[in-house]
Image 1 (cartoon, helix red, strand yellow):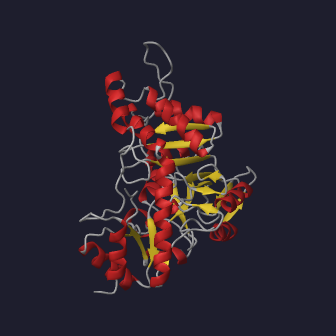
Image 2 (cartoon, one colour):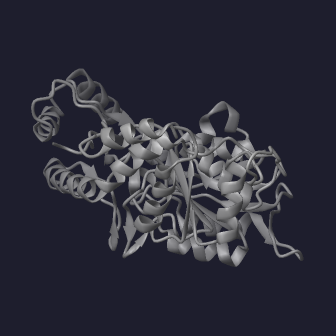
Image 3 (cartoon, helix red, strand yellow):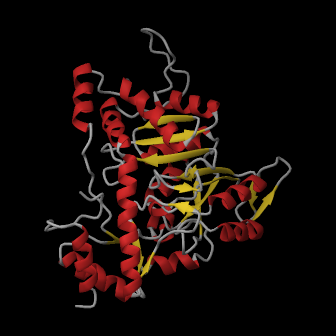
Amino acid sequence: MQRFQEVIDFIKQQFPGQDFIPLHAPRFAGNEKKYLMDTIDSTFVSSVGAYVNRFEEMMTEITGAKYSVAIVNGTNALHMAMLVCGVQAGDEVLSQALTFIATANAISYIGAQPVFIDVDRDTLGMSPEALQRFLDSNAEKRADGFTYNRTTGKKISACIPMHTFGLPLRIEEIAEICAIWNIVLIEDAAESLGSYIGDRHTGTYGKIGTFSFNGNKTVTCGGGGALVTDDEALARKAKHLTTQAKMPHRWAFVHDEVGYNYRMPNLNAALACAQLEQLPGFLENKRELAALYKDFFATQKITFVAGREATKANYWLNTIILDSPEERDAFLEQSNDNGVMTRPVWELMNRLPMFQHCQHDSLEHSIWLADRIVNIPSSVRS
């Protein structure tokens, strides 16, 4: 049981003075309380207010996208992205088995069905080679210009890769493949706020990118999400649908289609704005921690997932890869017994009862990674 004591001691050294080290704790060190009190004093605490507008402006400034829409959480942002991009019940959506369940759940909200594609080991995100192989073997473009699954006969209407743990995947290649096959690309950038490929922010390669501001994210507002896009019509449609599809009027309640109560409340937006102001400092802090981890684990002969060259990850959750499932489990037990929170990666989606029937490729890398990945403490340090 002493196999990992040096690792545990090193992690504790990065977070001194803590009896228990969480995986990723929020850090409130800016204008959070001030902006929350501003919101309370204004009485605009629901989905209309100055901080909602400011949040959307800040998201366009950070990501470089032309438009942003504040959403109540990241899962609903994915749902809305598919709705406005035309994904329909009965369609298929290409995604990853190695992902948080929100991705697959959102596809199910539409009445569509996920198809799971393998990931790359260095990015933990969808592999363009695996995507190309799947399409070449299973798909065909028909006279209407769209792509269909030859096995099921269903339209493949969208592709939703995820930037896992904030590590930018090979989204440029994915975008090229989707363009050739006329498949809408929606980026699940929930975990990658502040991650870049060159100078370009994740979430800006597809029709829409979606982000999460859940309690454990790099930037949090308790619960919140956003979608970003360069398409004005899609942004306008998303904003309309997320406000119950209510037509503008000074007093009348007129709704022109089925809408959704998906707008972010002003209270959450106030918190988000205060957090976004601190994003550059958060990112510098987290990248410094990742560099320390990378150098240390090289001495331990344990793989630290640093991401690919020419990218800048936010290192939302730092990730190591153990030699075997037995090693992983031993490390998880010893670290958690010693007050250091660590976690395995999520259960693969195709292994969950509600998605076991879904088509997938070999998932060779996904299965290998799922047996070995561990997330280690990644909070912004004092």
